[in-house]
Length: 159
Ligand code: MG
Image (cartoon, rainbow, N blue to C red; front, side):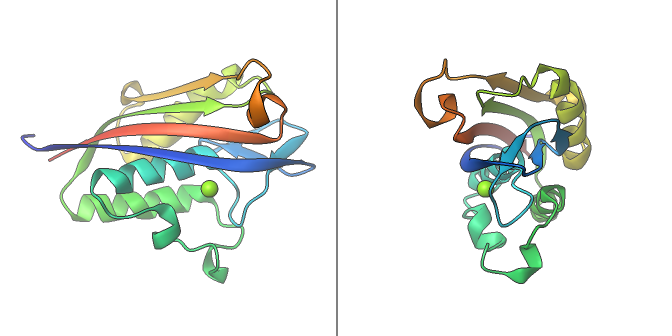
């Protein structure tokens, strides 16, 4: 590899009682989940934005508009697969990715390895190149009050 690009992504979804919670392609045991047009996988959305941002291709809303019926309730793993297809078609591969999930509850530690493995498979790299970290916000702000989930993602692409 002799050319590299970095990208960062950010996404927030509000939480509501009784909805399923998907993060990093993994179903999480929780009493509340993300309100969304898709399955609400805020971690995959931030990651897609980082991948698109690295190549200045706009954002997830441009590629997968939430006004389109095609994406109603869609599994976000499909969005990541399609984003990867675009990136690969331009000759780029993911070198590594680092994702930070800010959520007050539930505890995400039991799911971290499965999220890393799921995201790595979708990006066709080894799990050792995919970091997923979870933090609370010490009960501060909308995340701390359990009103939403916030995710930051960084990626390095190479070709
Ligand atoms: Mg989103």
